[in-house]
Amino acid sequence: MNQIIKVVENNVETKGEKMKLEFGSYSHNEAFARVVVSAFMARLDPTVEELEDVKTAVSEAVTNAIIHGYKNTYGIVEIRGEIEENTIKISIHDDGVGIENIKKAMEPLYTGAKESERSGMGFSFMEAFMDEVEVLSKVGEGTTVVMKKTIGNRTV
Amino acid sequence: MEQTQVNYEVTEGNLIIRLPEEVDDHNCQGIKVATEHIINEKNIKTIIFDCSKTVFMDSSGIGILLGRYKKMKGVGGEVYIHGENTRIKKILKMSGVYQIIKSI
Image (cartoon, rainbow over all chains, first blue to last red; front, side, top):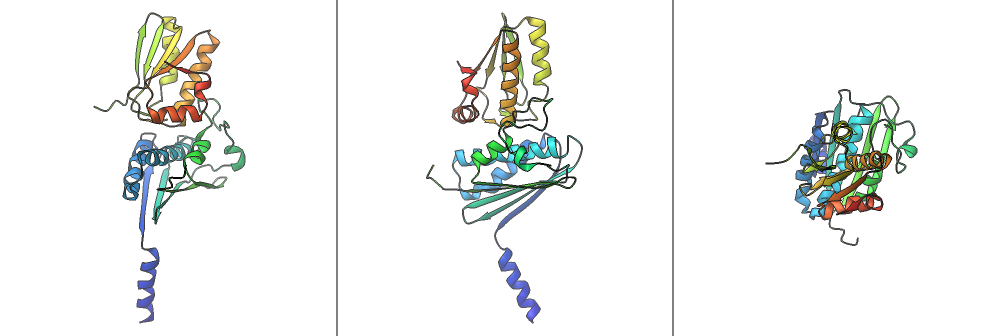
């Protein structure tokens, strides 16, 4: 009997809007990721600007996972989405090479791919468009970028 | 029909690069090589990026614009941008692109 009650309680705890998406690290999936996250966040009734902000941040993180995490080799990019009240939380994860110096990687104009024409503004864009950006990474294990944005914050 | 390809048009030393609806890492692949080729072949003095179709741009697009700017500056040429919507203007302003590439 106790066990049954516990299961019910667990269900209540985990209730809420959640989604998980996995896709191969192909660059054409950058657009796919943006579309899925837009659709997921639509229930918060965001403004066009809020929607574009989140789409841009997702695009930056997914591009990083593909180019820097997997260095254009094949791997799985995982996106988890959660909505709590009017805040959307998006986690973007890769099992790629990881980041040695996160602080340096997040500096404006720093690019880990100097030979190509990268602007080095990926993390700056994520930070500008989201309320919170956290980067967790371990060399050889991968990187997770966790971003949050409260929708309906009309203070800006 | 959604335009996902980059389009190039050359008229009298001007190269017009028509950017796709969504300018991201994927859609920008090949643009460096293609423009390099055209600049060398056709003696290009001015590049105009036409954004009239563009509704989305991330930092990959900024990289492309700045890359072309550096290249053209090196050969004494110029780069302009045209047709940006409000969102694209915001992105370009934020990243400081307007300080070196003028809108026409």
